[in-house]
Length: 373
Image (cartoon, rainbow, N blue to C red):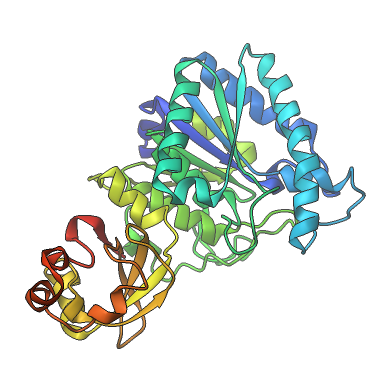
C-alpha cells in the first residue's frame, strides 16, 4: 500500500478544494459536466461514511457569462457583481447534484475578517462542526461580494488550509488543473513530477510559478504549495492533484503529490496567530530583543523596541520586525495600544513600574502570545 493510499484510506474527515478553472468552461460559465463529476465523487465518498467539506471557487467565474463578460474583470466592483450572480448559480448546481446522493449542503461564505478575528474564527469553527454533526456537507467560499481589495484571501487555497484546521480535518485535497507538483513548468519535458514532499528541503530548487493558466481564477501552484505548508504545519497531510483525478486520489491511488504532515500539531491558538491573523502594526526590535524573542523564546519588553508602526489596540496582532533587516521574525498579541506604546520604548519595566505604577511591569508581548515566523 503506497503512502498516498494509507493517508487517504485512514482519513475520516476530508476537506476538498477545487478552483475556478476546474469548474468552468472556456467562456467562463459553469461546466455542468465538471461540477456533476466532482459531485458524484464526493457524494460516493460521503455515502461511504466519510465527512466531506468542499471549498469551492467559481462564484465570480460562474457569473461572467450571465453578465456577458468575456473574462474575469480586473476591478473589484465588477468582480463582486459577478460573484453575486454566480454564487447562487454555483450553489444551486451543487445543491441539486448532492441531493441526488441524498445529501443536504450548507453554504458557508467567509471573509478574511471571519478568520482573523478570534471570536469570528470560533464562530466559523462551531458552524462547520454543527453542519457536519447534522450530516450536511458544508460548501465554503470566500464572500467575494463584500470582501475588499485590501483585505481578502485572493484565492481559496489558503482559505482551504484554514478551513481544514477549523474542521479538524484528517486530510486536505487540493484539486488543480495539473496532475501534481513538478520541478518546473509541467509542459517542459525536463520537469520531473514530485510524488512526495516530506518537508521544505524537498522543495529546494523547485520552480512553482506564480499564476494559474485559465484566466478565470486567481490561484496558481505557488498558492497551493503555501496552503500545503500551512495545513501540514497543523498536522494535516495534503494531496495535490488534478480535478479529473479526484476520484482516483480519494480512492487512495498513488496519484498527485503527497505533502506529509508535521508529526506535531501546534496549539490551535498559535496556529490562528501565525496563519489566520492580519497584523495591525509592526514593532521594530533591536538586536538584543530579536535574540531574546527568537533564540531564547522570551517575552518582548519595551527596552528592546526601537520604533512602532501602525494603528492597533491592546490585544491586536502585530508583527515583530528585526530593525536591522526589516524582516518580520515573529507575530504576537500586543498588550499596549499604538498611542501609549511609543512613550515606553527603550525603558526597563522596573523603571516604568516605579514611575507609572505596577500595571507597567507587563510585557509588550508575552511569550505565550507569540509565534515565530
